[in-house]
Every structure is written in structure tokens, then in C-alpha cells.
Amino acid sequence: MLTFKSQKRVAGGAQKALFIFLLLLTACSTRSYVVSDRHNAAKSLNLRGNESYFRGDYAAAAKLYDRALTLAMEIDDRAGMAESLNNLGQLYVEAGEFPSAQEKFLKAGLLNGEIKNNKGLAVNLNNSGNVLRLQGNYEAAAAEFEKALGLAREAGDKSGYAVITNNLGLLALDQAEAARARKYFEEALSSAKRLKQHRLAAACLQNLGSLAEREGKLDEAIAGFSGSVEEDRLAEYSPGLAKGLEGLGRLFDKKGDPVLSREYFKRAQFIRKSLGFK
Image (cartoon, rainbow, N blue to C red; front, top):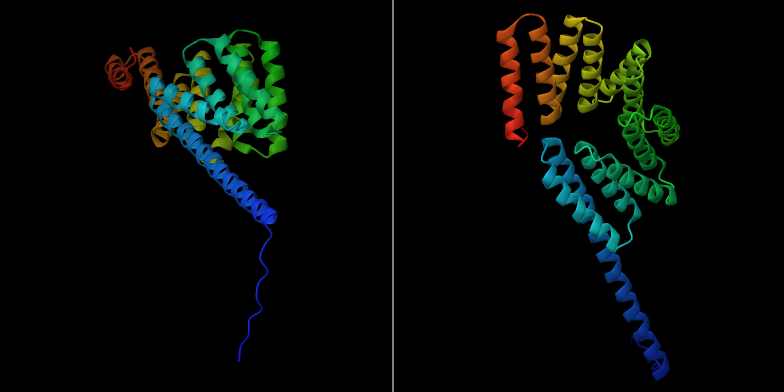
């Protein structure tokens, strides 16, 4: 015959303590769920914002990045805040509002520095360097790029390293150092193709095309811009596609082929109008 021992009753004070403990446990579990839910929502909003950015729909991207930033701030998700700020900074670069862009990149960098996210910090420093380059502050830009390059190397971020290398090429091009610029562009292009980073490959090919155009090597320039169009088509990056087509239109005009030139400009204009650009 099975027998069961009678259980002792828990004292009133112990019952109350147990109830409070269970209540706190439930609250913590709910809080954890809310944090996780908002973290995922912010991540999703940033990704959707990137999709709009790649399509050239910057107004939609701005709204999505702003919502992502708000959610990240509500749960003190510094990685999410940094990502959203960096994305917003890129939109300010597109708008030519460099001081506002730099402010966003610096804030993102501080947050990534706090959480020791070297990969994210490298992205922020690279973008900061690009703003300085566009403003003509080449010495400061070079310093930011070199710091970014070191952090990307430490983080093992091959794609980020290639992006920074391409920007070093642009800096060299701005300083009329053609051989150095070509070296950086070709190095970045090799990495981009190996990593199947089509948008980066397109940017490198456009830069090589522009360099060849400056040197009067029109056939080489056409090859560069044609390659960039194909890469941007694979990446479905419409603004880059329009820029590549415009480059081809300009080059064929220089070659004395107005019919082909007009055709490329027409295709570029169609894309720009569909994006809402003038």
C-alpha cells in the first residue's frame, strides 16, 4: 500500500514572501519579453529603412529610422540607437547636410565605443571620414579612415574593410593621386567581388571609370561604368543604377555617339523620375 507524508503548511510570512517572489519573477519575465520584442522591432525597422534607402525613397527611410531610434531609446538599446543614428546620418549626407550628418555619426560612435562594438565604431568613423572628405578636410578624413581601417581589421569585418579602402581611394582621387587611388579601388573591388557585395563592387567600378575618364581613357571608363550598371542591377540599387547610366551617357557623348548617349540619359532619367528625383 502506498502512503503519502502529509505536507507542512507554509507559515503566513513565508507565503507572503513566496507570493512577492513569484510576482517579481512574472514582472521580470514580462519586462524581458517587452525588451526583446522592442529590440526585434527596432532591428526590423532599420532593415526596412535600408530597403527604402536602396530604392532611393529617402523620406520613407527617414521615418523608419526615426521609429527604430525611438524604440531603441525606450529600452536603452545602445547598439540599436547607434545603428539608427548612423543610418540617419547617411540620409543627411545624401541631402548634403554635412554638419547634421557628422553629429549623427559622432553620437553613434560614442554609443558603439561604450559597448565596445568595434565593427559598428569602424562604420561610424568611416562615415565621419567621408563627411570630412566631402568638406575638403583631407588630413582629418585620412585620420578617421585609418582608425576605422584598424578597427575593421580587429573585428574581422572584411566587407567594412573593403568599404573603407574604397573611400581611401576617393580621398586619393580628390588629392590628384591617381596611381594611389587606382590601387585602393582595385583592392576594394577584388574584395567586394569575392564577398559578393554587389553595391560596393558597383561603387568601385564607377570610381575606376571616373578615374579613367579623367585620364582620357574613354573605352576603359565605359567598361567601368558598364560593369557598375550590372552590379547595381544585381543589388537592385536604383540610385547607383541611374548614376551609372548617366556616366555612360556622358562618355558616349564624348566619343561622338549622340544616339547612344541620349538613350543612356533617357534610361537614367526614367529611373530618377520613378524615384521622385529631378
